[in-house]
Image (cartoon, rainbow, N blue to C red; front, side, top):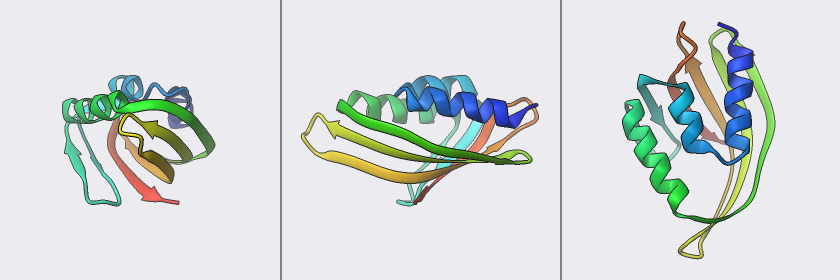
Length: 116
């Protein structure tokens, strides 16, 4: 598997705002996630539900910027800035690193988020 190409493609999907589609395409069925707020998901289905709910709460995308993607073996790290206006009029502004571990089939088995 060419993890660099897979990570680059996944990141380009995310950068277009298609976060749910990126998860559906690239997550393994048994994937898990964790973030800097101690929120976790177990399984692709749970992550799709989480991202669908989040995407549905966005009123306006002010910007999604991919700064860089780094790959070492089966691990990728992508730096993004996300800027959203939510339907409740709150603003979400995240500058974060998304670290992914990929399996031999080219699917994400673990994704973790870090404040950048």
